[in-house]
Length: 459
Image (cartoon, rainbow, N blue to C red; front, top):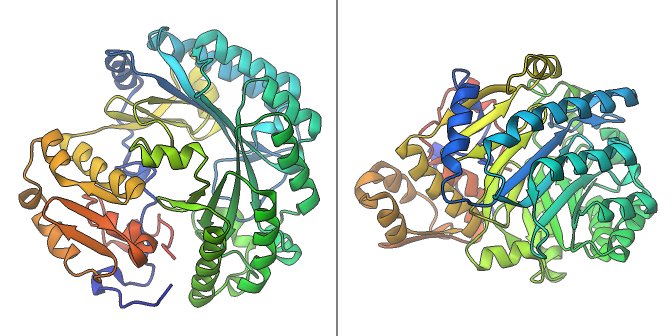
């Protein structure tokens, strides 16, 4: 990656931007969005009978990874999982009746935390409850995925997950270097990870994904080459390569990471450049932002077919589903709204004890939000924007509506963006700054440092 001159309006001390797992981003959700608003959105969404996607958040972990920015609860008390499962059942009893039973769930994802914190019996019970309350698809192209910590699953556990219906698995790796692992408090061997990947192949999982992070303490390009060699040898179908977001003011465990151990900007650029070259050489295609996939994988095929979309779990292979969030802190995207559950367990439990939906906040999207969301999501997923299709869909004149934004686009380096009268296309170095480019279309973006501090650096 060549160093380029960045326009003044993109420079700054933080160089931050949202990751745009939603637009508007989650910090702009409103506390006056109520359970009644969610109920109305769910009822509107039933018109047409579009497929559904379910996300179930399991917040528990056995140990703390210092880099983690997820909503998690670190505990060894196994009763915590049992209690949580009882409350998930209460939430299902309230949420499921809002949706037409004929609507088919074509996507299911368990995230966390560590979903495999639950015992085998508890995971079986949870899948039963989901199947009891929703119409889970039995089609071959349904995608049922689960995030796992390879340290918590053995061969028998992988067999159980496949038997429960999961056909895609995502494994956290981050880095295999022992010094980096010690610095982030996550000790995980190559052998254990490879055993889980091999078990996934043996039991017929359709897709195996591996998560890596660059920018962690003590990382260097030389050290990370070893991790890449080991991961590529496992031949996962997908990889996620995330930039470590050091936000200790928001995520307290990150205060245990020493700032002086973090790689420099130049080292991070070298890490990214070498990793991308190695993945390309191994046959992986870059998908949108942070993601890579083999041509045989559904993620690549969704991009080629124009179905790729982005949501709170990253990239989705199906564009037309309403996403229902279940569990503490989970976020749903239903009709023209976003809805988020209470982020703290006591409030989540109290709402359900009162027989109420555990809605904490959300957002009803305005026409301008829907328009800008389409622009940002097309750029993030497809790296292109079909201006004519956008104008027809939203009944606008693109050049007139986005006159100010287009003036800023003209200031970008020529090798970032191709701008034609009927299209935009991001290419070359622009792909590394895609969040900055999308930020131009973000009506909610503020130059206030307090606002910028909520988001991670782009590189």
